[in-house]
Amino acid sequence: MNLENVLTFTERLRLVTALRSIQVKVRWKPGKEVVHLSKRQTMGHLPGSASLADYEATILGLVREPQNAVYLYEFGNDRYYAVRGTSGDREWLVIFGPDGLMETAFPPEEVDEYLERRGFILLAGVEEVLKWTDGES
Image (cartoon, rainbow, N blue to C red; front, side, top):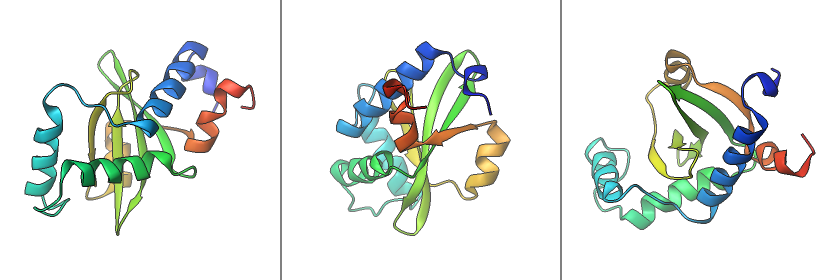
């Protein structure tokens, strides 16, 4: 895949900035963190006793893992990014916007099918994406 055909240089810089931001601190849209935590508990993705800190620790572990895959997801005119990785015994997706704000994180039933059905585009691993601003890509 020719990356220039998928993301402009400016979009690559925004992705790197967003990924670095979310690796430091999980940021949610105002009030959304409680909604997402509750939904993950209700769906059995997290134990009922899980705290927001537990949920965010899962997210941070996924976005910090150098070998996890990074995807582009387009929805209408909006672009989002996703990191795919394993936490515990489940494959998770962490989806965030180009501003580094969380959209959601969850373990789809069939990850490959979920990604394919929605048109996610594999970009690279976390480690490689972070090198894009170093001129090493």
